[in-house]
Image (cartoon, rainbow, N blue to C red; front, side, top):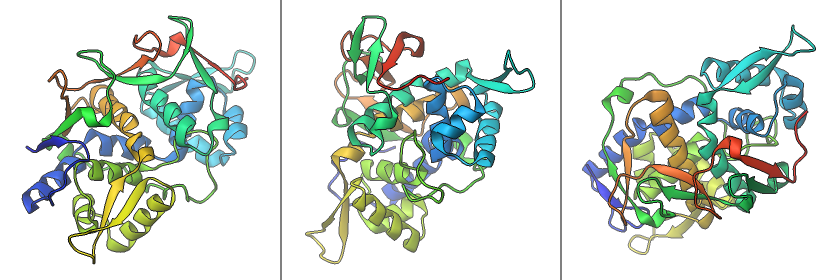
Length: 323
């Protein structure tokens, strides 16, 4: 096992550490979960469901998503148990889609998506301007907190232990090819985080101390040409900073930017959801809250009253409600 604070590792990783990082990422609930839900259209549909979209035509008009693509995503979300179908009362041969209890358990992850997009995304106008916590009656910003002690947590407050999970090592990967970062064919979705599975895995690898091209290639198993293009995309879109390595001028060092560091809440909430609600397996990347010493379980709380936020206790303002 390897334990270290997030993103501050300066010494190059040993081969043993790189192999451990590779195995931990490959068997992580983050990676396996993103193979199921990490493409841009799927998360756009999920976010639409939380914003009150229920009908096929409403998703299609809001997202400008191809009808065949939308049909595929809805079928997949029903098969995963995140949505259920109910006939329209006025049109029994057609169906509305509603979030299940399992789907509602994605809410902390969705709140982290909202928080990141409102601060860094190019499509903030597609999201509610404000969230109102019914429990305390105040507008709020979602904060990531430690379930054990209740303190607000930032990326520097955690250290990570890596422990590959054999159950996920043996699990076959989900089928399907993830789209490129913010440049997939067919344009951008109107809702949903604009980073894909590979971008989130690259950010996670840098977070765990992999700062050089060869380190990232090894732990992620990405070919050189593909990784070169993806790193360039992420530098261009402000998710990575590329610097000359002062110890070796032929190499570049990749570091997180404020925008990518802010994705850690999204990553931790999604990984935790995949672990507890889908795979029923521990995460291979295990954060510990340094202040209280407990294993870190993410909890999203209201910035005003510090109480956990549930989907039924939130109203949104500044976006027209779905029909």
